[in-house]
Image (tube, rainbow, N blue to C red; front, side, top):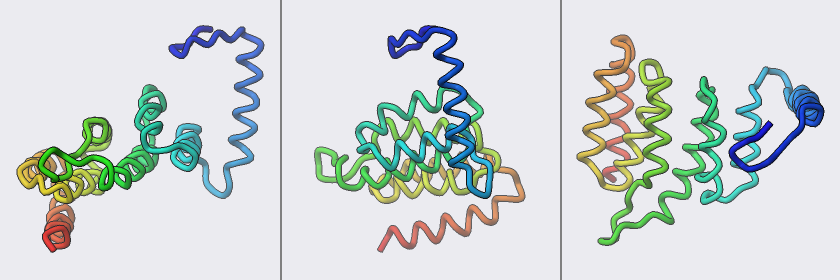
Length: 166
């Protein structure tokens, strides 16, 4: 087999790697089942710097469906780094392109049901004082979320606006 990372693996080696991965996954699975993507994302976020996480997250996200927990882990890691590293030319923080792409990818899979993803996305822009984008995200969320989630989303968005305005 040949992968995009220019690594060649023969069939027997690949089967051994799969068996070892499944065995490791079984050992890591405590009381609830987690996918290998979640285990991998947890390891990446725990052991790599944010700049490396941005580079390798795309590889983990290449095989949908991606569990929402994977997006949560990557978003949290990149949002933590975003406040200190990504400063615009006028001193105002800006949201990195990679983080916007990550949010958009999460929304493409979970946009109808994931209030938290929409809130994180809007809050990220509120923290950067990008109120126009935060408002646009709010409008998109109301169009895309299921009707029964609108009340929860609106209330939590208003709380986020009040917290970030302080």
